[in-house]
Length: 587
Image 1: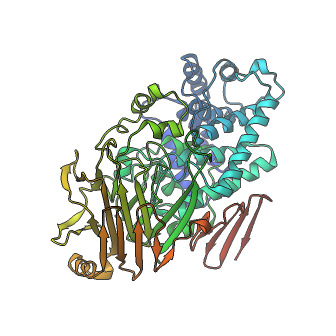
Image 2: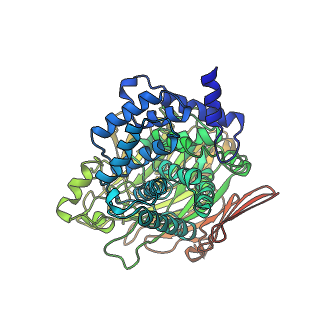
Image 3: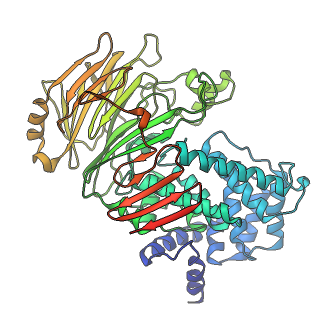
């Protein structure tokens, strides 16, 4: 009983008081990490969870010293767990363990990394540790800089990242895996930063990042185009970190078993529960809607005059399915996911509930655009950790020869692949969990995923190749190519045959020579015209990329360069003003 009361006291430390349901989810995750099945394999996350509950201080001290004595590794991925341990200590660790932790920040030099999440993790950890150990000279730090200098450098980078993200969009945007690292970093700062401005800025960024996810989720699954996603979770979308956050934050879907290590560190810091307006945005799918976002590319070190290029995202969401895309191109290296259809299922565990196509592009130019390593080790270095990058069969990645246009739940994807290009073909993922797949004499492919009816029209001949574990890969070895996709809900037609007849009645004209081009009257009555390399048209009007919002739609609204974001639900409004560091709520 004493332990239970102490646990409850420690867990009652979020930025705001949590609802009982939220607190119960938080508690269950922390308990899993605090009591591992094999105590001999305790890692940093287990130590941090035990300290949060006030348990086994002697064991935590001993195990921490063992881990540090073995030699820190992992760079910024080592920094953020031990930073949490340092702040969760609260006098529980032995002096010997505390000294070992302090010493490690003098003797181990973490690499700053080469991605946006790396840098945020690095500078968040450095900021908080410099705050924890103030007034020390450079001899006590691996950087060779004083505590004040480290704090100033870290604060400067964090402030610049917030400013760039809230005016021009996130660079490593909407990753269903790496979102967890952004969430935990700002959770740390919101809970542990002492500077009032830094603390407030971080608390506002929690709302900002959660809103970015809330409007693009379907029962906890992150939908739409992603900057980075791993191979299998791109297919079985439940197997992403987003599932843990959807469940913890909103009670959506099901968490992974056990929940990923990113969510535990989010909860060990602020354990922030979103406000009611974000809960409504995340869970209300009673009406279909189109959501727009503008993001930016990763830093482009070569071949471009601008460090960042714009990313234009469109996501159509309704209860039964979501359709999402960007404009195509290599907007991120290696792990980009440019478009797909995702259908809702009652239990997404083990289900590959998505459909998409891509050109499996692999090139030194792509890597040299986004990375600074020398060319002779580029592809081999990437393949050592991202095994599928140089595979013609891969199902993850962007291509400069893929252009995409989406209007509501219609997508037109065009390819114009130069001769001599590596992997000169198109791959399409057709899941093992599709039902009623029909190849029609008209050239359309019809299928049902859950309650979503899907029509696909390849512009060139294709064949089928089996996928290990189930499903089929559409393989089309034509350089000038494309796919027209239209989705609808089963409730609109009653079944696949009525849907098929409706699709066949829609006017469709296309050509592949000399340039792929499509004119299509969508199921929603809109005239769509798209030629590779040209701006698409809707009902004769050019798509207005120049005025694309940072966020636009019924729930989230922000203008480019405004530094403001407004959440909307019914009459509820919540406005985040990052220039004035104010939050305004109106009913």
